[in-house]
Amino acid sequence: MGSETSDDACVYRLSDSLALVMTVDFFTPVVDDPYVFGQIAAANALSDVYAMGGTPLTAMNLLCFPSCLELSVAGEILRGGAEKAAEANCVIAGGHSIADDEPKYGLSVTGVVDPARVLKNSGARPGDKLLLTKALGTGVVMTALKASVLTGDEAAEAIRSMGALNRRAAEIAANYHAHACTDITGFGLIGHVCELAEGSGVTVTLRASAASLLPHALDMALEDMFPGGMERNHDYFGSRVSVDSGVSEALTGLLYDPQTSGGLLFSVPAEEADDLLAALKKEIPVAAEVGEVAEKVTFPVRVVK
Image (tube, one colour):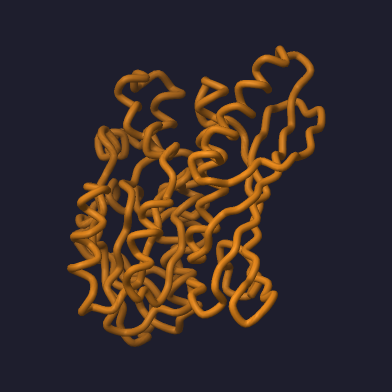
């Protein structure tokens, strides 16, 4: 599989029991600390393999670095990425760097998966429940931090969330029978749900008040501290989304808020949803049931209160 339904990674079958999972992701700094930036960028790239039901094995560094910064800064970025990859039992096998006016870092990751257990974003079925494993709001919280509206301490949970691997969520879900999965990143929850709904030929109802929110996310949304990506997501996906009148603009904005290294979204059979959610919550307390899947109607996504 490749880019036909905007899946998170490509999958290349090697045999009846083994396939490669391959992805690449890199971006500009979302925090000032280069070590933490390296951790977040690595966690974000590794997430694509987990979203496909795979296990990361090796990764290659991608680094763009300006000559005006000390090389020690590059070292800290790479150290953060290497330690996060090691946490995933993934080997950093090399990489490539170029000179650039702005730092950028990420990974090209290769993993493996049993072809029979690949999780696509196009397998959701009517009757499924949607479970999300991280809280929303990294975009709005980090925008507020950059604008000095929030302090580092106030944004600490958002930073911790971005640096957290989706490994355990994927391992727990592997004990169940998820029909589809995707990770929530730059297109926001609504954007990635829209891709899932359209790829699966279904309509998804999202319950706006059900998703966990990062500390200060709603307050910053009420202050309209959204990054520009929120408006771009709204412009691109908005015509495919029906939002009930009872859903506030701030909460709607958080559903469009672009996430960095967000959680996994699983579409699971209704009869397994409660058990899987309980298992997730034992280790990931912010995990939540955020919606359900139904037969296709006019809009791919409907947002209710």
